[in-house]
Length: 464
Image (cartoon, rainbow, N blue to C red; front, side):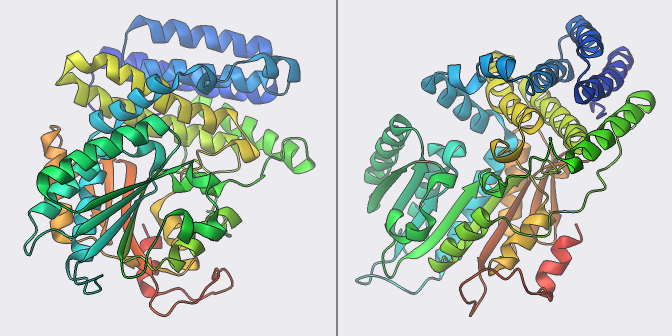
Protein backbone atom coordinates (compact mmCIF):
# COMPACT_ATOMS: atom_id res chain seq x y z
CA UNK A 1 0.00 0.00 0.00
CA UNK A 2 1.08 3.60 -0.64
CA UNK A 3 3.32 5.10 2.07
CA UNK A 4 2.79 8.78 2.98
CA UNK A 5 5.66 11.07 2.07
CA UNK A 6 6.07 12.66 5.50
CA UNK A 7 4.95 10.81 8.64
CA UNK A 8 6.54 9.86 11.97
CA UNK A 9 7.57 6.21 12.38
CA UNK A 10 4.72 5.43 14.77
CA UNK A 11 2.14 6.58 12.23
CA UNK A 12 3.87 4.65 9.44
CA UNK A 13 3.79 1.45 11.54
CA UNK A 14 0.14 2.06 12.33
CA UNK A 15 -0.72 2.54 8.67
CA UNK A 16 1.24 -0.58 7.71
CA UNK A 17 -1.39 -2.61 9.59
CA UNK A 18 -4.28 -1.11 7.62
CA UNK A 19 -3.16 -2.28 4.16
CA UNK A 20 -3.23 -6.06 4.76
CA UNK A 21 -6.57 -5.80 6.58
CA UNK A 22 -8.10 -3.87 3.67
CA UNK A 23 -6.86 -6.50 1.21
CA UNK A 24 -8.20 -9.31 3.42
CA UNK A 25 -11.54 -7.53 3.75
CA UNK A 26 -11.82 -7.19 -0.04
CA UNK A 27 -11.12 -10.93 -0.44
CA UNK A 28 -13.84 -11.81 2.08
CA UNK A 29 -16.29 -9.52 0.25
CA UNK A 30 -15.64 -11.35 -3.03
CA UNK A 31 -16.14 -14.68 -1.21
CA UNK A 32 -19.44 -13.37 0.15
CA UNK A 33 -18.43 -14.06 3.76
CA UNK A 34 -20.44 -11.76 6.02
CA UNK A 35 -18.79 -13.01 9.21
CA UNK A 36 -15.18 -12.56 8.06
CA UNK A 37 -15.98 -9.22 6.40
CA UNK A 38 -17.57 -8.00 9.63
CA UNK A 39 -14.41 -8.85 11.61
CA UNK A 40 -12.24 -6.95 9.11
CA UNK A 41 -14.54 -3.93 9.03
CA UNK A 42 -14.42 -3.70 12.83
CA UNK A 43 -10.60 -3.82 12.73
CA UNK A 44 -10.45 -1.14 10.03
CA UNK A 45 -12.74 1.16 12.00
CA UNK A 46 -10.69 0.66 15.18
CA UNK A 47 -7.34 1.34 13.48
CA UNK A 48 -8.69 4.30 11.51
CA UNK A 49 -10.10 5.93 14.64
CA UNK A 50 -6.83 5.92 16.62
CA UNK A 51 -5.30 8.83 14.67
CA UNK A 52 -6.98 11.22 12.25
CA UNK A 53 -5.08 11.36 9.00
CA UNK A 54 -5.62 11.17 5.23
CA UNK A 55 -5.06 7.42 4.95
CA UNK A 56 -7.31 6.72 7.93
CA UNK A 57 -10.09 8.73 6.29
CA UNK A 58 -9.49 6.90 3.01
CA UNK A 59 -9.70 3.56 4.85
CA UNK A 60 -13.14 4.43 6.22
CA UNK A 61 -14.40 5.38 2.74
CA UNK A 62 -12.95 2.16 1.34
CA UNK A 63 -14.57 0.12 4.12
CA UNK A 64 -17.93 1.73 3.34
CA UNK A 65 -17.48 0.78 -0.33
CA UNK A 66 -16.61 -2.82 0.53
CA UNK A 67 -19.66 -3.13 2.79
CA UNK A 68 -21.88 -1.86 -0.03
CA UNK A 69 -20.31 -4.28 -2.52
CA UNK A 70 -20.97 -7.19 -0.14
CA UNK A 71 -24.67 -6.30 -0.09
CA UNK A 72 -25.02 -5.71 -3.85
CA UNK A 73 -25.89 -9.33 -4.80
CA UNK A 74 -28.78 -9.29 -2.30
CA UNK A 75 -31.46 -7.38 -4.19
CA UNK A 76 -33.49 -6.40 -1.14
CA UNK A 77 -30.51 -4.96 0.72
CA UNK A 78 -29.04 -3.29 -2.34
CA UNK A 79 -32.38 -1.73 -3.23
CA UNK A 80 -32.84 -0.40 0.30
CA UNK A 81 -29.51 1.43 0.32
CA UNK A 82 -29.74 5.12 -0.49
CA UNK A 83 -27.17 6.14 -3.07
CA UNK A 84 -25.08 8.96 -1.56
CA UNK A 85 -25.53 11.20 -4.60
CA UNK A 86 -29.29 11.04 -4.04
CA UNK A 87 -29.07 12.84 -0.70
CA UNK A 88 -26.45 15.43 -1.66
CA UNK A 89 -28.34 18.66 -2.19
CA UNK A 90 -27.33 20.29 -5.47
CA UNK A 91 -26.03 23.57 -3.93
CA UNK A 92 -23.85 21.64 -1.44
CA UNK A 93 -22.57 19.34 -4.18
CA UNK A 94 -21.72 22.32 -6.38
CA UNK A 95 -19.90 23.94 -3.45
CA UNK A 96 -17.83 20.77 -3.06
CA UNK A 97 -16.99 20.83 -6.76
CA UNK A 98 -15.82 24.44 -6.49
CA UNK A 99 -13.82 23.60 -3.35
CA UNK A 100 -12.12 20.81 -5.30
CA UNK A 101 -11.08 23.17 -8.09
CA UNK A 102 -9.83 25.78 -5.61
CA UNK A 103 -8.02 23.46 -3.16
CA UNK A 104 -6.44 21.07 -5.63
CA UNK A 105 -3.10 22.26 -7.03
CA UNK A 106 -3.62 19.78 -9.86
CA UNK A 107 -7.00 21.07 -11.09
CA UNK A 108 -5.71 24.63 -10.91
CA UNK A 109 -2.52 23.70 -12.77
CA UNK A 110 -4.59 21.93 -15.40
CA UNK A 111 -6.61 25.10 -15.99
CA UNK A 112 -3.45 27.21 -16.30
CA UNK A 113 -1.85 24.78 -18.76
CA UNK A 114 -5.01 24.45 -20.86
CA UNK A 115 -5.47 28.23 -21.05
CA UNK A 116 -1.90 28.74 -22.23
CA UNK A 117 -2.30 26.09 -24.92
CA UNK A 118 -5.54 27.72 -26.11
CA UNK A 119 -3.89 31.15 -26.34
CA UNK A 120 -1.06 29.74 -28.42
CA UNK A 121 -3.35 27.70 -30.68
CA UNK A 122 -5.44 30.72 -31.73
CA UNK A 123 -2.62 33.30 -31.67
CA UNK A 124 -1.83 33.07 -35.37
CA UNK A 125 -5.31 32.09 -36.51
CA UNK A 126 -5.96 33.97 -39.76
CA UNK A 127 -9.59 33.03 -40.37
CA UNK A 128 -11.76 35.93 -39.27
CA UNK A 129 -15.37 36.98 -39.54
CA UNK A 130 -15.82 40.54 -40.81
CA UNK A 131 -12.10 41.18 -40.09
CA UNK A 132 -12.59 40.42 -36.39
CA UNK A 133 -11.12 37.22 -35.03
CA UNK A 134 -13.75 35.07 -33.35
CA UNK A 135 -12.56 32.47 -30.85
CA UNK A 136 -15.11 29.88 -29.80
CA UNK A 137 -14.13 28.02 -26.62
CA UNK A 138 -16.13 24.88 -25.88
CA UNK A 139 -15.97 23.78 -22.24
CA UNK A 140 -16.89 20.10 -21.95
CA UNK A 141 -15.56 19.76 -18.41
CA UNK A 142 -19.10 19.69 -16.98
CA UNK A 143 -18.85 19.11 -13.20
CA UNK A 144 -15.15 20.10 -13.22
CA UNK A 145 -15.86 23.43 -14.91
CA UNK A 146 -15.04 26.55 -12.88
CA UNK A 147 -15.53 30.27 -13.71
CA UNK A 148 -11.99 31.07 -12.57
CA UNK A 149 -10.48 29.27 -15.56
CA UNK A 150 -12.31 31.44 -18.07
CA UNK A 151 -12.03 34.66 -16.07
CA UNK A 152 -8.25 34.24 -16.27
CA UNK A 153 -8.40 33.47 -19.99
CA UNK A 154 -10.41 36.65 -20.66
CA UNK A 155 -7.72 38.63 -18.83
CA UNK A 156 -5.04 36.90 -20.89
CA UNK A 157 -6.89 37.78 -24.10
CA UNK A 158 -7.18 41.39 -22.90
CA UNK A 159 -3.40 41.64 -22.57
CA UNK A 160 -2.73 40.02 -25.93
CA UNK A 161 -0.62 41.92 -28.42
CA UNK A 162 -2.89 43.28 -31.13
CA UNK A 163 -5.94 43.30 -28.88
CA UNK A 164 -8.46 40.68 -27.80
CA UNK A 165 -10.64 38.65 -30.17
CA UNK A 166 -14.37 38.28 -29.96
CA UNK A 167 -14.88 35.43 -27.51
CA UNK A 168 -17.72 32.91 -27.58
CA UNK A 169 -17.85 30.45 -24.69
CA UNK A 170 -20.09 27.39 -24.70
CA UNK A 171 -20.33 25.50 -21.41
CA UNK A 172 -21.94 22.09 -20.88
CA UNK A 173 -23.17 21.53 -17.32
CA UNK A 174 -26.10 19.86 -15.55
CA UNK A 175 -26.75 22.71 -13.07
CA UNK A 176 -28.79 25.67 -14.38
CA UNK A 177 -27.93 27.84 -11.38
CA UNK A 178 -24.21 27.23 -11.90
CA UNK A 179 -24.51 28.19 -15.57
CA UNK A 180 -26.42 31.37 -14.68
CA UNK A 181 -23.75 32.38 -12.15
CA UNK A 182 -20.97 31.68 -14.63
CA UNK A 183 -22.74 33.71 -17.33
CA UNK A 184 -23.07 36.69 -14.99
CA UNK A 185 -19.46 36.62 -13.74
CA UNK A 186 -17.92 36.26 -17.18
CA UNK A 187 -20.21 38.79 -18.86
CA UNK A 188 -19.38 41.39 -16.20
CA UNK A 189 -15.65 40.72 -16.61
CA UNK A 190 -15.88 40.96 -20.41
CA UNK A 191 -17.63 44.35 -20.16
CA UNK A 192 -14.93 45.58 -17.77
CA UNK A 193 -12.19 44.42 -20.15
CA UNK A 194 -14.05 45.70 -23.23
CA UNK A 195 -14.01 42.26 -24.89
CA UNK A 196 -16.88 41.27 -27.22
CA UNK A 197 -18.30 38.23 -25.46
CA UNK A 198 -21.11 35.72 -25.88
CA UNK A 199 -21.99 32.96 -23.41
CA UNK A 200 -23.87 29.85 -24.53
CA UNK A 201 -25.10 27.29 -22.02
CA UNK A 202 -25.95 23.66 -22.75
CA UNK A 203 -27.74 21.86 -19.92
CA UNK A 204 -26.66 18.25 -19.65
CA UNK A 205 -23.68 15.97 -19.21
CA UNK A 206 -21.06 14.89 -21.71
CA UNK A 207 -22.50 11.38 -22.04
CA UNK A 208 -26.04 12.71 -22.67
CA UNK A 209 -25.16 15.00 -25.60
CA UNK A 210 -26.48 14.18 -29.07
CA UNK A 211 -23.23 13.37 -30.86
CA UNK A 212 -25.07 13.14 -34.19
CA UNK A 213 -26.01 16.81 -33.91
CA UNK A 214 -23.07 18.24 -31.95
CA UNK A 215 -22.49 21.07 -34.43
CA UNK A 216 -25.92 22.57 -33.71
CA UNK A 217 -25.97 21.65 -30.01
CA UNK A 218 -22.75 23.60 -29.43
CA UNK A 219 -23.84 26.40 -31.80
CA UNK A 220 -20.67 26.25 -33.90
CA UNK A 221 -20.47 28.87 -36.67
CA UNK A 222 -18.43 29.16 -39.83
CA UNK A 223 -15.07 30.95 -39.57
CA UNK A 224 -14.50 30.55 -35.84
CA UNK A 225 -11.24 29.44 -34.29
CA UNK A 226 -12.38 26.55 -32.08
CA UNK A 227 -10.68 25.42 -28.88
CA UNK A 228 -12.10 22.54 -26.83
CA UNK A 229 -11.38 21.91 -23.16
CA UNK A 230 -12.40 18.60 -21.58
CA UNK A 231 -11.24 18.00 -18.00
CA UNK A 232 -11.95 14.78 -16.06
CA UNK A 233 -14.95 13.77 -18.18
CA UNK A 234 -13.94 11.65 -21.17
CA UNK A 235 -13.48 8.52 -19.04
CA UNK A 236 -17.26 8.51 -18.60
CA UNK A 237 -17.52 7.64 -22.30
CA UNK A 238 -15.58 4.40 -21.78
CA UNK A 239 -18.68 2.75 -20.31
CA UNK A 240 -19.47 -0.71 -21.68
CA UNK A 241 -21.65 -3.52 -20.38
CA UNK A 242 -18.76 -5.64 -19.09
CA UNK A 243 -20.49 -7.09 -16.02
CA UNK A 244 -19.96 -10.87 -16.20
CA UNK A 245 -20.50 -11.58 -12.51
CA UNK A 246 -22.96 -14.40 -13.09
CA UNK A 247 -21.32 -16.03 -16.12
CA UNK A 248 -18.78 -18.85 -16.18
CA UNK A 249 -16.05 -16.32 -16.95
CA UNK A 250 -17.31 -14.28 -14.02
CA UNK A 251 -16.81 -17.21 -11.66
CA UNK A 252 -13.23 -17.65 -12.88
CA UNK A 253 -12.66 -13.94 -12.33
CA UNK A 254 -14.07 -14.27 -8.82
CA UNK A 255 -11.58 -17.03 -8.02
CA UNK A 256 -8.71 -14.96 -9.43
CA UNK A 257 -9.83 -11.95 -7.37
CA UNK A 258 -9.88 -13.96 -4.14
CA UNK A 259 -6.49 -15.59 -4.75
CA UNK A 260 -4.70 -12.34 -5.51
CA UNK A 261 -6.28 -10.37 -2.67
CA UNK A 262 -5.43 -13.08 -0.13
CA UNK A 263 -1.84 -13.10 -1.39
CA UNK A 264 -1.64 -9.34 -0.90
CA UNK A 265 -3.22 -9.56 2.55
CA UNK A 266 -0.53 -11.98 3.70
CA UNK A 267 2.43 -10.24 2.05
CA UNK A 268 1.36 -6.59 2.16
CA UNK A 269 2.67 -6.34 -1.41
CA UNK A 270 0.66 -4.46 -4.05
CA UNK A 271 1.58 -5.80 -7.49
CA UNK A 272 1.08 -3.70 -10.57
CA UNK A 273 -1.85 -4.82 -12.69
CA UNK A 274 -0.86 -7.25 -15.41
CA UNK A 275 -3.93 -6.57 -17.52
CA UNK A 276 -3.43 -5.02 -20.94
CA UNK A 277 -5.45 -1.96 -21.98
CA UNK A 278 -8.66 -2.80 -23.80
CA UNK A 279 -8.03 -3.23 -27.52
CA UNK A 280 -11.08 -1.43 -28.85
CA UNK A 281 -12.27 2.13 -28.36
CA UNK A 282 -15.82 1.94 -26.92
CA UNK A 283 -18.55 3.03 -29.32
CA UNK A 284 -19.70 5.95 -27.16
CA UNK A 285 -16.20 7.45 -27.01
CA UNK A 286 -15.60 6.80 -30.72
CA UNK A 287 -18.88 8.54 -31.62
CA UNK A 288 -17.97 11.52 -29.47
CA UNK A 289 -14.47 11.89 -30.91
CA UNK A 290 -15.74 11.51 -34.47
CA UNK A 291 -18.24 14.32 -33.80
CA UNK A 292 -15.53 16.51 -32.25
CA UNK A 293 -13.20 15.91 -35.18
CA UNK A 294 -15.96 16.98 -37.58
CA UNK A 295 -15.98 20.40 -35.86
CA UNK A 296 -12.34 20.82 -37.01
CA UNK A 297 -11.07 22.39 -33.77
CA UNK A 298 -7.75 24.22 -33.72
CA UNK A 299 -6.93 22.33 -30.54
CA UNK A 300 -8.51 19.96 -28.03
CA UNK A 301 -7.11 19.85 -24.49
CA UNK A 302 -7.71 16.70 -22.46
CA UNK A 303 -7.10 16.37 -18.72
CA UNK A 304 -7.71 12.97 -17.15
CA UNK A 305 -6.95 10.98 -14.01
CA UNK A 306 -3.82 8.99 -14.88
CA UNK A 307 -4.67 5.61 -13.37
CA UNK A 308 -5.67 2.03 -14.23
CA UNK A 309 -9.20 2.11 -12.82
CA UNK A 310 -10.82 0.49 -15.86
CA UNK A 311 -9.60 -3.07 -15.27
CA UNK A 312 -12.15 -5.85 -15.58
CA UNK A 313 -10.91 -7.66 -12.45
CA UNK A 314 -12.11 -6.09 -9.20
CA UNK A 315 -8.82 -6.88 -7.43
CA UNK A 316 -6.86 -4.86 -10.01
CA UNK A 317 -9.17 -1.88 -9.57
CA UNK A 318 -9.06 -2.23 -5.79
CA UNK A 319 -5.25 -2.22 -5.57
CA UNK A 320 -4.87 0.62 -8.07
CA UNK A 321 -7.60 2.74 -6.44
CA UNK A 322 -6.20 2.23 -2.94
CA UNK A 323 -2.74 3.42 -3.97
CA UNK A 324 -3.96 6.23 -6.23
CA UNK A 325 -6.36 7.78 -3.72
CA UNK A 326 -3.91 7.31 -0.85
CA UNK A 327 -1.51 9.57 -2.77
CA UNK A 328 -4.35 11.96 -3.57
CA UNK A 329 -5.51 12.22 0.06
CA UNK A 330 -1.91 12.63 1.22
CA UNK A 331 -1.36 15.50 -1.22
CA UNK A 332 -4.51 17.21 0.08
CA UNK A 333 -3.16 16.86 3.62
CA UNK A 334 0.08 18.58 2.61
CA UNK A 335 -1.66 21.44 0.80
CA UNK A 336 -4.30 21.93 3.53
CA UNK A 337 -1.59 22.03 6.21
CA UNK A 338 -0.68 25.50 4.98
CA UNK A 339 -4.26 26.69 5.47
CA UNK A 340 -5.95 24.81 8.36
CA UNK A 341 -9.01 27.07 8.14
CA UNK A 342 -9.97 25.20 4.96
CA UNK A 343 -10.10 21.81 6.71
CA UNK A 344 -13.90 21.67 6.41
CA UNK A 345 -13.66 22.28 2.67
CA UNK A 346 -11.05 19.53 2.35
CA UNK A 347 -13.32 17.11 4.21
CA UNK A 348 -16.22 18.00 1.91
CA UNK A 349 -14.09 17.29 -1.17
CA UNK A 350 -12.82 13.98 0.25
CA UNK A 351 -16.32 12.73 1.02
CA UNK A 352 -18.45 14.16 -1.78
CA UNK A 353 -16.05 14.18 -4.73
CA UNK A 354 -13.16 11.75 -4.21
CA UNK A 355 -15.19 9.43 -1.97
CA UNK A 356 -17.94 9.06 -4.57
CA UNK A 357 -15.35 8.29 -7.26
CA UNK A 358 -13.94 5.52 -5.05
CA UNK A 359 -17.37 4.03 -4.41
CA UNK A 360 -18.19 3.97 -8.10
CA UNK A 361 -14.89 2.24 -8.93
CA UNK A 362 -15.26 -0.39 -6.19
CA UNK A 363 -19.00 -0.97 -5.89
CA UNK A 364 -20.40 -0.63 -9.41
CA UNK A 365 -20.08 -2.91 -12.43
CA UNK A 366 -21.10 -2.77 -16.08
CA UNK A 367 -22.91 0.33 -17.34
CA UNK A 368 -23.20 1.69 -13.79
CA UNK A 369 -19.41 2.02 -13.45
CA UNK A 370 -18.49 5.33 -15.09
CA UNK A 371 -15.28 6.26 -13.22
CA UNK A 372 -13.15 4.34 -15.75
CA UNK A 373 -9.85 6.21 -15.49
CA UNK A 374 -7.07 5.16 -17.86
CA UNK A 375 -3.40 6.00 -18.48
CA UNK A 376 -2.15 8.58 -20.95
CA UNK A 377 -0.82 5.88 -23.28
CA UNK A 378 -4.34 4.44 -23.54
CA UNK A 379 -5.85 7.85 -24.28
CA UNK A 380 -3.21 8.27 -27.00
CA UNK A 381 -4.49 5.06 -28.59
CA UNK A 382 -8.14 6.18 -28.43
CA UNK A 383 -7.33 9.61 -29.86
CA UNK A 384 -5.25 8.26 -32.74
CA UNK A 385 -7.85 5.67 -33.68
CA UNK A 386 -10.42 8.45 -33.90
CA UNK A 387 -8.35 10.59 -36.25
CA UNK A 388 -6.45 12.91 -33.90
CA UNK A 389 -2.75 13.75 -33.76
CA UNK A 390 -0.77 14.78 -30.71
CA UNK A 391 0.16 18.46 -30.27
CA UNK A 392 3.21 19.05 -28.02
CA UNK A 393 2.61 21.35 -25.07
CA UNK A 394 4.95 24.34 -25.32
CA UNK A 395 7.82 25.22 -23.01
CA UNK A 396 5.84 28.28 -21.89
CA UNK A 397 2.80 26.15 -21.00
CA UNK A 398 5.03 23.86 -18.94
CA UNK A 399 6.65 26.86 -17.24
CA UNK A 400 3.24 28.27 -16.29
CA UNK A 401 2.28 24.87 -14.88
CA UNK A 402 5.38 24.71 -12.69
CA UNK A 403 4.82 28.25 -11.43
CA UNK A 404 1.27 27.36 -10.43
CA UNK A 405 2.41 24.23 -8.59
CA UNK A 406 4.96 26.31 -6.68
CA UNK A 407 2.23 28.75 -5.64
CA UNK A 408 0.69 25.83 -3.68
CA UNK A 409 3.99 25.07 -1.96
CA UNK A 410 4.85 22.21 -4.32
CA UNK A 411 7.84 22.04 -6.66
CA UNK A 412 8.63 21.08 -10.24
CA UNK A 413 8.98 17.41 -9.28
CA UNK A 414 5.18 17.38 -8.99
CA UNK A 415 4.94 18.14 -12.70
CA UNK A 416 6.73 15.74 -15.05
CA UNK A 417 7.12 16.36 -18.78
CA UNK A 418 6.97 13.16 -20.78
CA UNK A 419 6.81 13.18 -24.57
CA UNK A 420 5.56 16.79 -24.58
CA UNK A 421 2.63 15.98 -22.28
CA UNK A 422 2.30 16.98 -18.63
CA UNK A 423 1.95 14.43 -15.83
CA UNK A 424 0.97 15.82 -12.42
CA UNK A 425 2.29 13.65 -9.58
CA UNK A 426 2.53 13.20 -5.83
CA UNK A 427 5.81 11.47 -5.09
CA UNK A 428 6.17 8.68 -7.65
CA UNK A 429 2.40 8.35 -8.16
CA UNK A 430 0.93 9.84 -11.33
CA UNK A 431 -2.36 11.58 -10.59
CA UNK A 432 -3.37 13.49 -13.73
CA UNK A 433 -2.32 13.82 -17.35
CA UNK A 434 -2.74 16.84 -19.62
CA UNK A 435 -2.39 16.43 -23.37
CA UNK A 436 -3.24 18.40 -26.52
CA UNK A 437 -4.71 17.10 -29.78
CA UNK A 438 -6.01 18.22 -33.16
CA UNK A 439 -7.57 16.38 -36.12
CA UNK A 440 -5.09 14.56 -38.33
CA UNK A 441 -4.39 16.66 -41.38
CA UNK A 442 -6.50 15.20 -44.17
CA UNK A 443 -8.19 12.67 -41.86
CA UNK A 444 -11.42 11.13 -43.06
CA UNK A 445 -14.56 10.42 -41.09
CA UNK A 446 -14.91 7.28 -39.05
CA UNK A 447 -12.88 5.45 -36.47
CA UNK A 448 -9.55 3.90 -37.43
CA UNK A 449 -9.74 0.77 -35.29
CA UNK A 450 -8.83 -1.36 -38.31
CA UNK A 451 -5.44 0.28 -38.82
CA UNK A 452 -2.34 -1.56 -37.58
CA UNK A 453 0.28 1.09 -38.30
CA UNK A 454 0.27 4.03 -35.89
CA UNK A 455 2.01 7.39 -36.42
CA UNK A 456 5.43 7.69 -34.78
CA UNK A 457 4.22 10.51 -32.53
CA UNK A 458 1.66 8.18 -30.98
CA UNK A 459 4.07 5.25 -30.60
CA UNK A 460 6.32 7.11 -28.20
CA UNK A 461 3.32 8.17 -26.08
CA UNK A 462 2.41 4.51 -25.65
CA UNK A 463 5.83 3.83 -24.21
CA UNK A 464 5.00 5.86 -21.06
